[in-house]
Structures are given as structure tokens and as C-alpha cells.
Length: 110
Length: 113
Image (tube, rainbow over all chains, first blue to last red; front, side, top):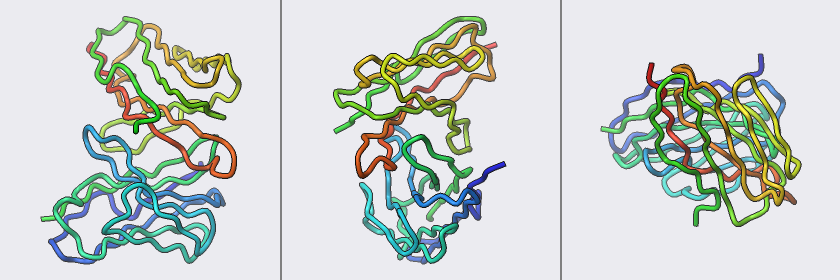
């Protein structure tokens, strides 16, 4: 069964901490994506990667960075967590015919 | 600018009823997908439609892609409580960025027993 695995389901971090969210896919997809999902705002694209070491900004990249050193792994980094980054974070891989999503990480910044 | 408008935003119905949700755009898409998301989980791909006028059926769910490939609908027959969830449509614009999807904000469906 093909999978996208996110390292944590729930995280609580303090303001100012550096936060790493990890995502691994086993489908050999070239494209990987990070979204955040907030009530009333829908899914918003933070960053995406179309190849190893390649990345592009999505719609809301401010306060985030990403790393893709291996094809199967795409990491989202919050350089200095803030309370307005409390959200559900979703990783996905795939292409124009559809994405496979991970189960999400519910991040709370206090 | 919201490229994909979903309606209604919220829908609460009784078990056994039929329903239709819509996904509309002024833009043409090379393909369109529907996802269902349950609380606390990631969206799960239900179907992909690629041809204008295409109709796909998945048990009690019927998906249709508009002739002009600008809109889509999802019809559920005899809804069950297990159909409860957030239904998202997403479209691919084609060309060089075909892998990058545009998502609607979703229709939150509640089916009451």
C-alpha cells in the first residue's frame, strides 16, 4: 500500500523554537508538497519540490524553509515558531492526476 | 483569487437522502480530482476525471466533469453517516506546472443517522 508518512501526528512547541516536520513517501514521486490547513482558509501551499535539492515557494512561504536531500524525504522547517503558525500541516506527493497525502501533523505553538 | 469555487460550503442531511456538490471555475483544467477528508486525517483521493463530459461512478458516488472542463459535480445517492467528511475538488492547469494542483476550500458534509 503506497504511503506518505509524516513523522508526528501532534506537536506542541514554544514560541521561538526551531521546528522540523518530516515527510517520507514510498512511491518514487518526483513532486512533493507542504500545505497548511486552517478553518475557512482551505489548503494553502507553503513550498513544493519537483526534484532532489530543488524547491519552489508556494503561496505562503514566509517563516518557513524546506529541505529535500533525498527523493523520498521532504522536510519543512519553521525557523522560529510563532503562534500564528499553529495549524494542521499536510505533506503530499504526486502529480497532475492526483496527490497522496500524509495523515497530517497538528502543530500547536504556545 | 479563488480559482475553484465549491458549493455549498456546508451541507447537513439525513441518512438516505441524495445530494450534489459543485466545483466551479472560470479556468480550464486538464484534469480534476475529488478528495474526501475525515477529521484529523489527510485528504484521500476518490477519483480523477480528465475528459470533458466524463462521468465516473464509485459505488454510490457519481462524478462528472463539465464539457468545457471548467466545472465538476459530485452526486451521492442514499447518503450514509460514513460519507460524512470534507469534500475537496482540485484541478491541474496543464502545461509545465501540471503537477501543481489548485484546491477548492471544500464542502463539509454531515450525514445524520
